Length: 298
Image (tube, rainbow, N blue to C red; front, side, top):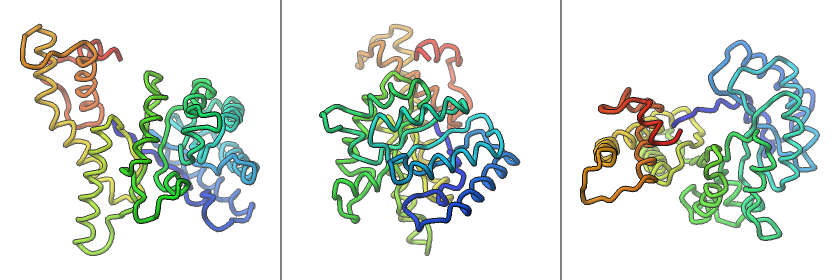
């Protein structure tokens, strides 16, 4: 399932940029809130600064200014970047309870994957979120840089990225919290050859994520949206014939050369449901939506 997250003022509040005066950031936050109030979208949000000590006060101030300017629309969520401890998630829960917010944890630091005590902190973070976490996002470049990966090799398909996302998937398994892959900074801008090469890379990376069970991802440029949708639609449509045939054979108890089990049937039904939900197809021939959801357990 694709979800496009419109992050209001994401670059204005990015702690990696040059420092912005408090009065200016307050004004940006109010303007973004008013703009979102006037033009609500199905999914929207704001990425605040990290709640590490140096930026904690500014992060909370921006969030309060934004929210006090007007109630956000339904589907709004806060992205919490560079999380390194369970206490930061607990602090976010305290703020979220004031405004009845949902938030997403951006896994950009190695400490979120393996803590000093050797445990997978991301799993503990999910439990500490008290049901308010609605996504785990992998941050390609901050995470890679923190591990000393040279810039030329920083990618969402680097082995360190695959390790981090595998831990995230295990931590979030059966919690209902979706995983989002990171972005690629190779943008489709410039001459025709450069654009085509960037699109080809993006298509391959999106499909790679889908094949690994990660159904959402970050994009940095509007020109990446055509390849995001195209790669996603192609993935689900390509898998449609085999999924429908195997699921029908399973339900009708027809023997074949693939011995599918109940867990696989759930996965087959899940593929078909996602194909409809993301818009790749309007319906699945031979199945009703109720049938598919009954098999998938959703």
